[in-house]
Length: 288
Image (cartoon, rainbow, N blue to C red; front, side):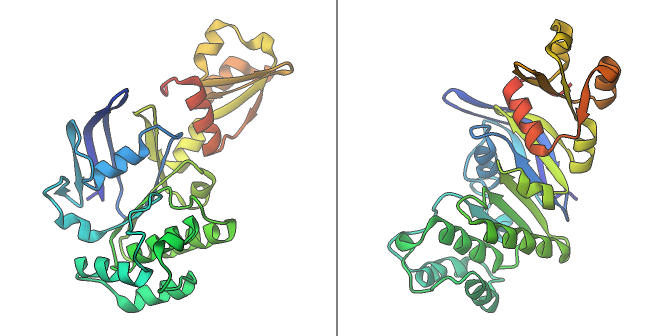
């Protein structure tokens, strides 16, 4: 059973439309959800959390349907958001006393351990906490009821580089225990280079791909060469192109075809996830 199943999901907000989207999040792995700002990542996550009602399609978590009236599945989810979802006038301890009773598996000892590890003062008011402290607190709350699934919306935003590294180590430890699953939304793809097993990429409300990270990286290729190589047909073969006075570099989603087209007239590089996101967003073309 997959941890999350998304089938034909669609949602419209004014000028933004999330097209019919279908993909799954495999159980026991870390799946990165990437896309530029405004791509629809937060809308998708809020729909999975039952906070947004889709216009069409279905979402299930561990085989249970998701919706505003279906709250039981959230017992198995630890939700971490970049948005401030706490009451600013409360202290961290007071906020914890509100949250903890909702979770039968709440582990106070584990919560205290995270608070100490993250150096968070229980008596500090939320309004006086920095963005990084609020994110650490959100992580402590989310992890302290032994969730089977962590859903993280831009969790490294506002964190210093040292704690970002600590968080990734923490996630690596979490995923080793039992059949834990993580859906990790971010536009900082370097975080996923270290920890992700699968990657789902959305752009302008559309699904670009959802596959293993290794298969994705093996299928794409960066091509570099002189501008004389760029006729109309070649431009159509590349997902995105960056040009300068010295030449061009572009992204192909078909490694073998690109090498056949350009031969020894071009140079080739292995793209990163950031390269793939940048060129795809820049070009605005679907994957071939």
